[in-house]
Length: 437
Image (tube, rainbow, N blue to C red; front, side, top):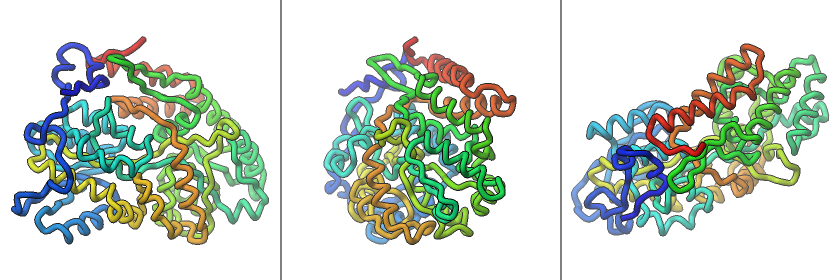
């Protein structure tokens, strides 16, 4: 029996309630070898809950080739809605066989005894992923999911406008601020280098990772929360200065106003997961062919580390009556040659290395940028190793609330960080976790 140390960082009876063990497939533990999975010969149907765009095309490909094991796909909501629904359904005995989660959501799936351990069956596929990616699905030596896609951050920029005005493509954040000044002075004075939506916790966490921040760590039976770190303060102070000097716009991302500014060439860069180039063509269709890709500017010159924005994992649930077949499906979907290459075909940036290498056609947004995917693959090698904690949902909600209030009130956004930290620590303690002071 393998006790998961990071899970035992829970006080009292809570530790007993959520401690997980790796056992045989008969009692809900790890599965056996993939090629021995389908033995009964009886057709079965697996329920899969996932929100990924176009994933139905890959499910259809599996179903066409595997008449004895069919997958019925349900999209139960957006990525933020699914975890609660899965936990609730699993506890009611009505959960799916397979589910999708963001990497930051997987710990809560494990703690809630919803994600099933698949260490043994995953082992032959581990070499298909970079070590930092394997770490995202591994807790105290046990594996609980198969990585699907990842979102190392990169920067897309309006190449046509940069060329027209002779703007340099910034390679450091210091240069980024300098170019931002040039952009504000150019043209009719209505262009910005970027947009900073104060409530975009997902992007902010990725930028702090790049600066060396790790919001959660675990040591033995204690969690440590370091949201109010110097790295986080430095990053947030940088962006507040940009907002205060009117060097970036500050409209909510994804809104009609943001879409209009992007389409009209008023916002000239977008720092996001490298996958974003695959979906932006439908968001800013008027700008197709006017973008190029670049590395995210560096906090420390010469240090090319980047954080994540987005990315997800498929896992087998503890309520599945067919865990071996379910594991076979998610291994094929994400780790096999055919599966990983198929993810690339539906505009995902595969977590598997061989899937990344199969990306050859430039994104629709920038059809002439032949270097985009090779660059993205290089960027992916420089991701910052992180440990997600049990309650990123609390951190993101608190960040959005506190930073949003600071921007509205004109107060220091940096002063919001201690409030976010307190909210996360209080939530962990209330849930029975041991937290280092």
